[in-house]
Length: 554
Picture 1 (cartoon, rainbow, N blue to C red):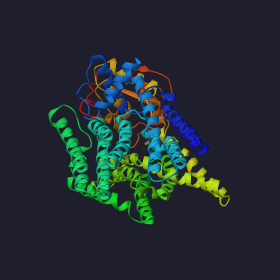
Picture 2 (cartoon, one colour; picture 1 turned 45 degrees about the vertical axis):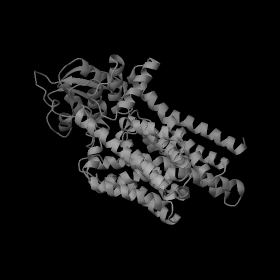
Picture 3 (cartoon, rainbow, N blue to C red; picture 1 turned 60 degrees about the vertical axis):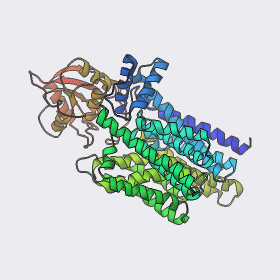
Picture 4 (tube, rainbow, N blue to C red; picture 1 turned 90 degrees about the horizontal axis):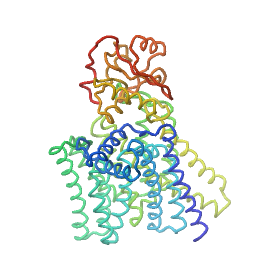
């Protein structure tokens, strides 16, 4: 093994170790899930381990992750509520490793020397480990982390299957496609677009009846299987299906974007580099423009405005995004470049559809979700640029300082975005997790009374997901905006007087410390604790009937 290749492997190992460490950081603040949906998965796994079967009252795309969590909990003899966050840490670190391995193979197949390919793979893994937005999405315990991992693996395996026509790769592809709809709906759409893009690119290079009928039938069959599964789940079972209705509301528009994807995968790999750079910057620029506009004024009235700290960190990410534009030559090779090209154009298609379908919070959420899948191919592009700069340093002393400064700028600025992973997006406070004190307050309110209770959006989600309590937050939101005191049991927090109560998708609501103290003094406080964010549970004086939570969906 050459010295350069050995250094590359050392960097890869260090980068993956850093990925695990950063994704384990939420455990420093709390052993509970760092995303609210994690409590629902923990309940499903707990029910499965206790009864031997998954309750079919969940989403149709929760089955794989819930089963996976159940198995891990049984094998490790751990409570699902406590094992789910470490599990997310492990999967998130593996994603970075797989991203680095795929990047190395892409470079090798594109004609690069083994030493260069190893270096790019190592840098890619390191960038994925520290880049704030990607770190955020691969540190939370939900089914999307499995979806991201499977999308990367599918793109790699399908491209090798199309090129080699070997049975073993087709078997792996078939298995991956079979589990996608039960793993994560949004990732399944991305996977279907990746499959479409790779098949079209393969046919454009090796045009024949065999290449059209075989791979083409695979792509059509997967789209049919995906929609059939979700239609069956929604119409014939108690399972719910997210996202699909957004596509079915504008089927013609989605088909138009699918056709643009098919044209784009061929056009991108044949057009000039300057045109590719302009097109790429236009795509990523739209994301930064949306975040910037939302910081000036909420795009949707009444929803959360981008906090200045979040805006600043996202702006720093612009260095990473612009750097990727100088590595777009990676898209030009069919043997290797088809993989990152398909992985880039698939989420771009969803972003384009979301921006042109409807100006509503649901489609805005679609756009924000899709950008997560852009980070892997973008990291590969940035890895190519950084390795090229470092190789220039070793070959010549001319411009050595400038090259090293540019590499340092990209790495330091990317690392500087890491706090995005731990900040709540509406209040820009750390951490974005549930404290022990918060969970204990929810546990008390949910287990010591059968009546509904109210709180802010975060705590009511915990109650509804894990304890299946009757909850709501409209009464709290009304009180925080000057309305009457809730006539229900209320879980309140000290942070309501500082950063505010979470009222997603609306902006946070705050109350002064004096008003909060006077309000609690007029109620019967039946529970209180201490901690990072002290929680109180209070009920109104008298025999008021709580109706605020019975008709509200959290």
